[in-house]
Image 1 (cartoon, rainbow, N blue to C red):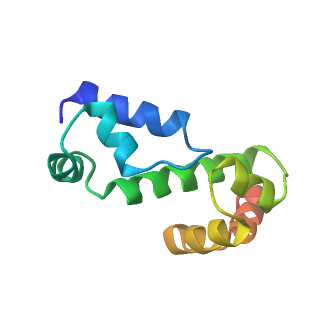
Image 2 (image 1 turned 45 degrees about the horizontal axis):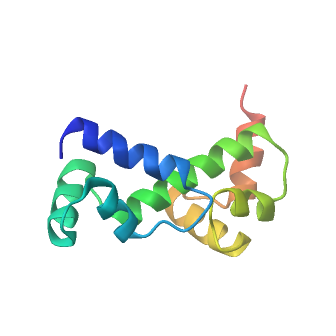
Length: 110
């Protein structure tokens, strides 16, 4: 995947994090065949499209957790998660701590 194509994917994901993002949507952005897209995506990003989207959503959640004191349910909705539980489970798996605990620990840092 060319650098400009990777930027197109990154921009599309960033602009659409609040809603569902399907692999078919990403395939259409680059006009690749689905099989070629999967192979090229993994080579360029080092993960599957689904993993990439979930990581971007977690990064967005981390940003919102640091910037605002909103409830986790609101942050989950802002980041495109189905519910707070979905956010919490994925956050714990990727970051290693529950989002509430992570937020408290970050607030204690100088």
